[in-house]
Length: 421
Ligand SMILES: [Zn+2]
Image (cartoon, rainbow, N blue to C red):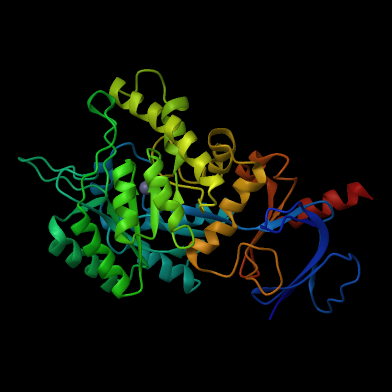
């Protein structure tokens, strides 16, 4: 078993408490000792990393990952991509996530049935570099729902699979589970950023949602739901969904329902896509109705998530990276969006990006604490003082997963240590 000793680091431990100086010993895949008395640890045979002044923190978790998204603008671009190419792209995206400091990724859906599953298996077998991955199936949608790109005269595939009625949904959910997913995805509301900026509609019935939940829970799998409208959030909570994404139009009743299940349910805004649409889309590239819908969504998220934070609802960062305006690898921008749009402090946003992410994944990481998995980042600088440094891979001097260095920039560490002498 390999041992690594980080000497003189500032530990931001994932609880939200201020960072403190410590020496940290990793033994095998877990954290062995966090010693606040520096210079005392005996670590015979350990690889010693002199990292005075650097921040050691838990690895980030992408809470709404789509490793099968190909940085393209249209949903049909995903349907048009053949499975062979698509799998290679997903493998590359998994590596990009880990290179960007994400040691965990909870998939919010896979554009094709088995891609998440095979990438997860290859990562676990040590055949591909990537974060710990929870695999999902394709988005299950109803006729006319989000992701149904078919026309009466023409079949078009997207990221979704169309299933109508409880029987079809039950059957497709069971198929996903048979093929190895950790969770299924239900599109309960639409996006509806069209038609003069109408608010998102709720299109999946409670009977249909319950069928998906029953299948998943029978096999001890999770259920994720796409819910922008208030009504869709209420249906999802009432039907036992585990992870409820977006939720920006949640009203008082929806917020009360979310609060009533806060020990069990996770929420994630996937705010990056709204931010990019409102602030970064070149003039004239978004039709007026869409633009109005995005603007309303971003405003509504600012209200809903401030309220969720007050109520102690666990919110995870990330979401919908892999579109043209939100390319893969920019996922850490979400932490800054939490601060700028949703009223979180940098430290609170970091807790969402680390500890809550690992709680969602059900893994023993997300805290720099004895006996936790050593999924860690060694950062050049203080992310609480400047959250944006996590977006710069160059500032990530070390990326460790299960105690193994995926990246360790020894040259820079040694140069900086010599310069400090
Ligand atoms: Zn998504």
